[in-house]
Image (cartoon, rainbow, N blue to C red; front, side, top):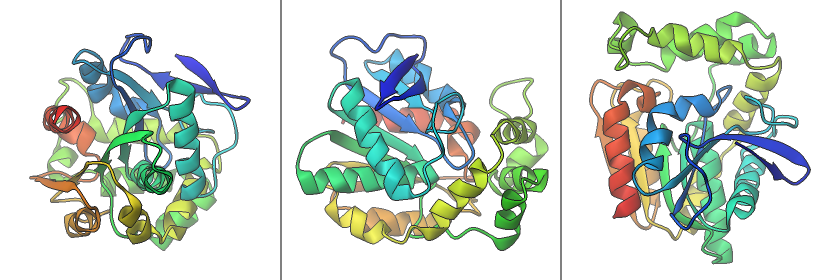
Length: 267
């Protein structure tokens, strides 16, 4: 579906269900260089288990209009505008860059005590998200090497030899294809935003809603230990580590992530 945030059109996947009605709303936001399709294994599931699910394309990604937002703070504020546009309150779920943005949004909402963010789920998050210089340079040059590095570093060892939960699909090839479809300059903008964001502890201290942090024990981009440290900064948080899992746990462990999200959202 498409809807307006300000004067720009936003695209969201809804699990083939309408966002009309009174069911609780879940807004899911992707990581750097990615789009709404990263949540395909969770969107439809939540949409058929009592929620209105919206996996959104951040401006400049997928088919959402606008220029990519240059800071995590800007993406977080945009997420609050998305919630307002879709009904005024929502559960926020974010991955990687999207996790930082969701955390920032929940922190702002906690300060305002407006109740727009009902719960927070963070996947592949850390106390900091420094970007490897080789990856950043490749992204700034719009070099296909950047897509290959993110995909290789972003998946656990088992995914490098197959093991896609969806039979017949190539996990690493799919990751490269998704990143390759991003417009020039978008990935570099995203990575610079992640690199520059140093306010994780401050944002976490302001969050008032129940939170869930999911980490992969083989995550080389946001190590599990750093994810646990984020959970410890949150006032009301659960931490779960998934075995044999890298950074893209919603693809690598879709069933487990679905169940964890559902339990958190209904708990």
